[in-house]
Amino acid sequence: MPTSSRSGGQPSPAAISVTALRKSYGDKTVLDGIDLHIPAGSIFALLGPNGAGKTTTVQILSTLITADGGQAQVAGHDIATAPHGVRAAIGVTGQFSAVDGLITGEENMLLMADLHHLPKREGRRVAAELLERFDLTEAAKKPASTYSGGMKRRLDLAMTLVGSPRIIFLDEPTTGLDPRSRHNMWGIIRELVSDGVTVFLTTQYLEEADELADRIAVLNDGRIAAEGTADELKRLIPGGHVRLRFSDPSAYRRAAAALTDVARDDEALALQLPSDGSQRELRSILDWLDAAGIEADELTVHTPDLDDVFFALTGADRSSAQTKEAVR
Image (cartoon, rainbow, N blue to C red; front, side, top):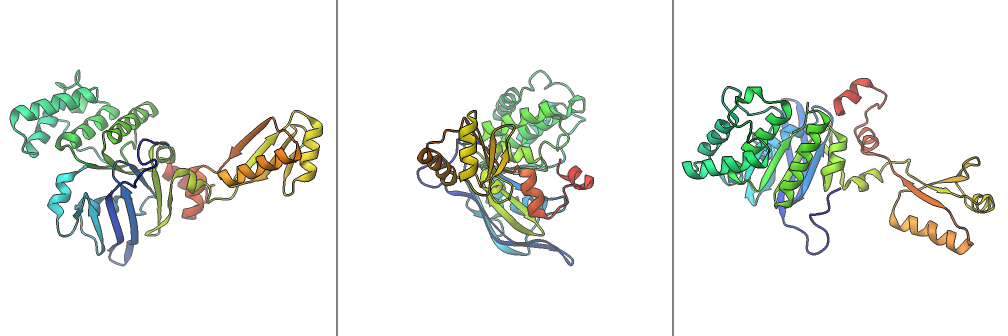
């Protein structure tokens, strides 16, 4: 998990603040009063099943569509009363690439510079710097239609950065990429945040949220089912435990006899205790071992992963192949 932002000191100001946001299409409620507070310079991930409202949330916050109710401020600007201020502060990379395959990568960049009203010389400088930063200089003169999926995604994000946005919305930015390209994109996203940019990420890859996000929210049935760090969310789900392994059979037997609600593995000389993995609970176990004069050779903490969290909070059937496909 990233730690560069927000450890200690005063809390960061909000880059995005959302209160009771609502959106319906006909009789279908997509967002049913969601609240969000996203600190500046952080990575926030919004998870949810297909159709949960992730893209709708991005579209509202980026002023592409209007909300039916509630309030939201992005970069200090109200999305309803100051949409131009919002648009000047953000960049958006959607699920589908905005790259024009009929022109070169460099021409795509220069077109974006023109849209941002940059002077010609400044536009060429910015385009060249971003093409180099995203390792696209060699391919810059080639038609974008010849680019691989990963290269198109990098070009798409580079185009988003032409206007130096303070907040970037990435709506499923790595969908369809191979693992290597996905990891490359993760590195780019981390670099953006290290430069002070705030990233609002929607993703179907739970590993991606676990790897990148400072905070994660799970959207289900139009509401935020849970929000927190990845570790906090994992502790919400039963199944966490601490495993104690012993090399001394006598110490193992003494611990097994003294501890309650423990699962034994006599062959491996290991005990398994239910635990939420919190620091307080681990300290209690270690203090008890010290007081009893029992030494465990190995202590490991096992917590549910984000897959477990996702399926528990969204009420999905993990055995369903269709559902598995939806969150891969």
